[in-house]
Length: 587
Ligand SMILES: Cc1cc2nc3c(=O)[nH]c(=O)nc-3n(C[C@H](O)[C@H](O)[C@H](O)COP(=O)(O)OP(=O)(O)OC[C@H]3O[C@@H](n4cnc5c(N)ncnc54)[C@H](O)[C@@H]3O)c2cc1C
Ligand SMILES: *[C@@H]1O[C@H](CO)[C@@H](O)[C@H](O)[C@H]1NC(C)=O
Ligand SMILES: *[C@@H]1O[C@H](CO)[C@@H](O)[C@H](O)[C@H]1NC(C)=O
Ligand SMILES: *[C@@H]1O[C@H](CO)[C@@H](O)[C@H](O)[C@H]1NC(C)=O
Ligand SMILES: *[C@@H]1O[C@H](CO)[C@@H](O)[C@H](O)[C@H]1NC(C)=O
Image 1 (cartoon, rainbow, N blue to C red):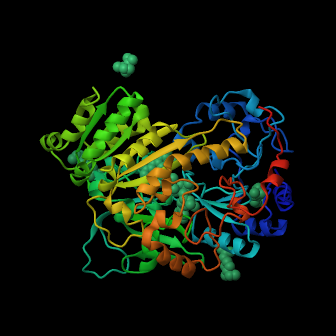
Image 2 (image 1 turned 135 degrees about the horizontal axis):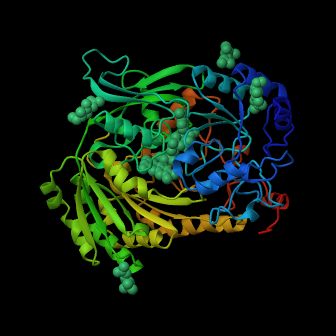
Image 3 (image 1 turned 45 degrees about the vertical axis):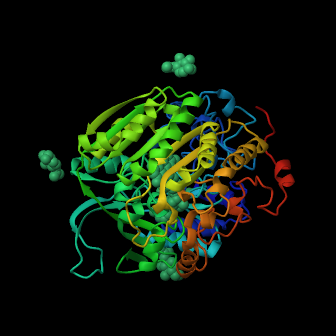
């Protein structure tokens, strides 16, 4: 496609339903500033469609077959700019037909690609730039400041609340920043020479857990990574909290990060650590991605290789058994957290797995008695394993069983303290929510034994022993009403849990899109301080995202694809949206 015609279409509003767009000249100038590297944001499934909207033939059978076969491949999706792990962020949920998607329940379903369906842009940013250096970020800030075209930062595209997508936006894609560098004597820049040096790993913004864990194994170190191969370590994961199965012993990502290199919205490359730009360092340790600037790299403290003790529990996952098992596990949960165990319980896999980074086999057997008893109480069984590295644990127990992607999925989650888990009403409401949903999971991944050293995550994390989630999907071709019904079901199902844990909160990276009182739920008392830091470094709000610190609110055009389940978020009429549906319910 000729650049001029592409930018002309964009400027003319043909490629985006967003009211905000720049002139053709503005786009062309930006493209020249970045050496002609602006790219068209092609939706992931486009090769399966005979035609792009109003455009030429785009079908590519070989590519289409690969995309269909690998629809649920986390790493493959993360390698494609036009893909999001949760596919509602590829579509415009409020505009039926404004999407370019396969039928996730049957990716080879040809009806998904047949007229009147077309490949439409949905929420995929129409233009993006692969960031190579500071100047790329500066050029984007300049452009957004002048044109008001919203700027979005995208890394792996795992975000559950859509903060790395956005209709009509210019996106910065971080994937080229692949640095990975181990230092044995790292001292944060600007700290006094007497500062105790650390074994530390510096990670470029585009690095993902798969390569980091392989690097760690080869280099005899341990990185406390999350439970997914393609989540990025230096992006949303760490800025929002960053949990790991090792967190009960080693803390969250925010507890382990020592330094960030970030381009703030004034165009300045800053180093943020405990000795300089301390306010920014606080904000980046929990305040959320896409808010305070564009991070180019971050440095984490790492451990030498550890031997991991593992307990695998298995059971016959009838509803009754799952309920009894979780009730029993809840009783022992605080004791296990205090002993440093992390773990994941997944009824859909009829199993739970726990890990410990420092116990001997004997200590592991002794301290896990409550787990063994819980599985025995439902006629289940258990096995012990000793894994030589955390990477081996990940490869054996996590990688083959990652949470499903390549479909729309919406979550509700909560952090549970030991006290909350000793209240049977709360526990039963949590269990019913999990088991009555499409996918539920208990994650024992809280920093129970790690004191806060100035992070901005909700302090409720420190008391919590479990982070649990429930979720719903919706089928391909769902109407807005059907989508809204799933959001509402989440809210209803989780209401008792929220009421009875009013002093707790939720993990902002794995949250309900419509989390009530999100400022308090995500940050507790830290919100006001975070807002002041946001306003200091980004007074013009060049960066903005859904439920982020200093959020502009749902009426901004960037959020026009978010539904409005309560009917109170947006003042504009939903009637208008329904009437302008490009495609009626043809499937
Ligand atoms: C299948 C799956 C498994 C998961 N497992 C875990 C887990 O085990 N532990 C855990 O803690 N979380 C987990 N998550 C949640 C994960 O932490 C969030 O989705 C997180 O937002 C991903 O960050 P990202 O940068 O990789 O993704 P993106 O969606 O690309 O970005 C997320 C947010 O960060 C911003 N951002 C990204 N890069 C930068 C940057 N360089 N500078 C500034 N802002 C940036 C984006 O603008 C966006 O707001 C999981 C999610 C999924 C879908
Ligand atoms: C940017 O300019 C280059 C070089 O002229 C061109 O190849 C490219 O297609 C342009 N980008 C877009 C999105 O049109
Ligand atoms: C951004 O704008 C500033 C101020 O106009 C200018 O000095 C700078 O060169 C611009 N940077 C880029 C990379 O476009
Ligand atoms: C890691 O440890 C192994 C076994 O002790 C050793 O052979 C190897 O050289 C070490 N690798 C590095 C990069 O230090
Ligand atoms: C699980 O329990 C159900 C109900 O008791 C029983 O019908 C089924 O055979 C059991 N499955 C296994 C694998 O034990």
